[in-house]
Image (cartoon, rainbow over all chains, first blue to last red; front, side, top):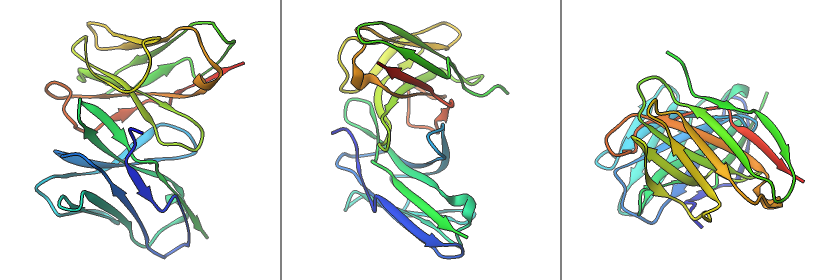
Length: 110
Length: 115
């Protein structure tokens, strides 16, 4: 499969709680990105972390990258019902292949 | 600034037919990539075009082909449609040298149903 691995596949939390999801990959990367998708629509870019960065913040989002373990995590703090969506990591694999993880479906209950 | 637009939004075809999907990239973007997303799955990379040349391809058979035009808009063509081709097809544009991994801007997709 071209896809990276993401876990968990699904996550259900209460509003106000934090949501953490992980992405693992197998190739060397220049950067890794996270995207959100609402109900089978187009994906929206959330954050990009470069291979020489270990952590990056954007609003309520925190992304980490561990190139030695070939893994990244996305943390959404103080979740809201509007954060309900699927979240995907994206990286470039060998042969210029843009590769998405399998996704984490997040449900935030009011 | 115009975003990425895809057409048609929905279409139904029968097995064996051919389909053409279209994508207008965001103004100033020279790279377009296409993805197939089956229900409940992550998008799968079909191919990418940079300045009218294909510069990356996923594990899709040759009946999936594409074009990028001088204005950087793009087409995805699928011949000899199969039932498993039913999916959401997403187009994304980006700017960069030789299709670097910069931020991707996605259209809303074309949902293809093959009967």
